[in-house]
Length: 200
Image (cartoon, rainbow, N blue to C red; front, side, top):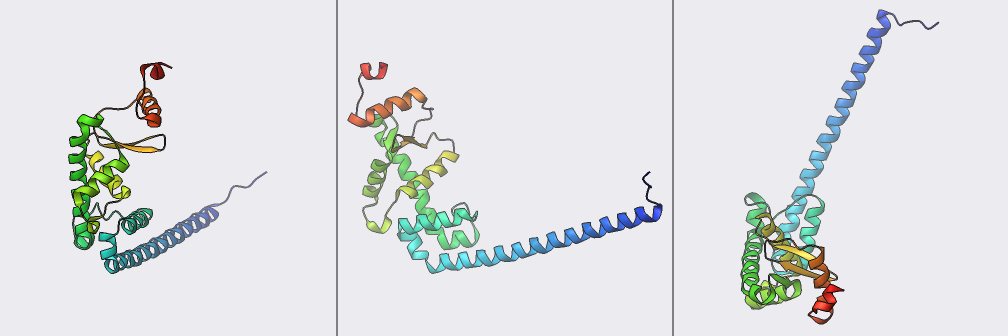
């Protein structure tokens, strides 16, 4: 037969639970404080890195892409900030992204009568580079992808889709279904499709 603990035993067990709870809360607070300190240190080091390499971030699309990738891995989006350190330091980069987005819209609208609202990403980058006319304002595919992702948020119908190995920018507010995608894949090989090919 098992004995029930007495009042003294229950009080001791309750006190032990309270002590463990307090100890757990203290450990959690210490960990949180340590993580906040590490995050503040990392942020200041990231800011120093950005300050030191500001010109490379602004002028070199490959370096800019790697910088954004590094920021994304730690949950920092310098392009999302419109005030404070990032806006001050990278204001030109944000302006470049905004200009890139506007120019992408202009190019897509201008080429829509010829391509139906689907433009090859490489062609878009080439046309964008021609508009800029200098290597000083070089644009990478990554720059275009970032600008289009910002356009997509506005619900304007801009989206990057992959057809086979190619990336296309869709600038018409309509969904492409599976049939559309298969027809586009067929057309990749020779640049066109016939009715017979599509029916098959």
